[in-house]
Image (cartoon, rainbow over all chains, first blue to last red):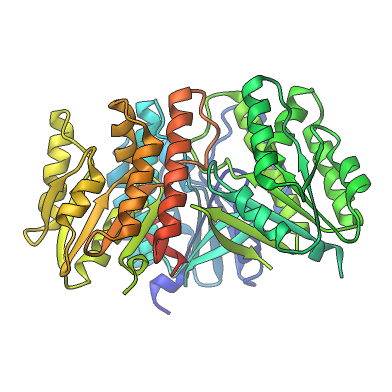
Length: 174
Length: 174
Length: 174
């Protein structure tokens, strides 16, 4: 199996049901499901939400946190017999920007790691954020540009790409 | 015919042509068309716009207003031989928020009414609003979350779901 | 060949890869490629970006500027054996608004020119901007309405319409 067949991208808007759809794909694979969370619990509300989602996924899922070193985490965790679900790329881009990292370099490094193959199948979830009015805020514009470029990089490498709206998947590739 | 075959959701962006597309579906059905307006004429500009749209639809359409009690209106108005067009769900969510209602409870009640069947075919139009940058404003974020969850609920119940862009429909389900 | 077969619309979000996809369609046609730029170099950053894109396209492309008189430029430049790529319609709408022009009249005039036929194939690229939250700003709302109406006009005339996300085209028409 080529590396591209092991890589899936699920794009969608806010509250589009993209994560639930992605969880269904991973759970239905029969492989050991691993949830790679890019979000961090900065406050009680966020901690509650993370705990609730973890409990919703049930005990078969293991959760690992990867707020910044996503490529390294994928190389460490991916393996034959396991299916990694990364939720989500846009939060990872936010974390990189907050940490003052060079997002384009980090995105290229992630792309290179995925292209070389990380040892097992990976599904990446991300928010499409480029279909509204140009934001006034320069930081928001930079974020939107980083996210859009990253989506193009990952979609070019992926074997399968879905766009999810209202909980319904539309296959864009594969 | 199962209830799901009687329910259609038409999603689209601002000025995407979603309402014109929906009106064409209803008018082409040969059933008596009823326009269920969730918008209210709060000022002269809005009143003018509503009157112009009503005149554009022509005399075969009857218009009923349902700014808040959408489930009740559908139960009262839906009937065999009639096709109801609800325009639009996002305006209904806005009205509920403005009136201080519990949007999730109202959305669940609408879903339950539609699932039980309201007596005739219904087409619901709504704005997809979750594909831009996260809004700064907490109210706008809450609105976006409510709309996204409602779209998932309705799409799961609907027999047919369209996404409209530039006046062109893309069938997502059905 | 009917005029509609000569007209292509490529819609997509910010950094969706829509221009690269459109360039590939034009370059792959074997016709003489002409880039019709609606953007103007108002500052050094923009001038740099324009020069870089021109150099990326390579020496086979000729570039003409059409910040306002798009219909006239298309009539002058289009010809059998040439393929014009207009990048992009949303920037043209912005220029018209900044210049105080009547956007709906200009959009109708562009539609009429394209419907009558301009002498050769034309591909128009544009940003879909209507899928986020309603903007606070009245100017942004007017821009969004103008862009949405223009997209409907062009899509109705076009033989082929694509929606591009993450660099992947989805055919909406044709």
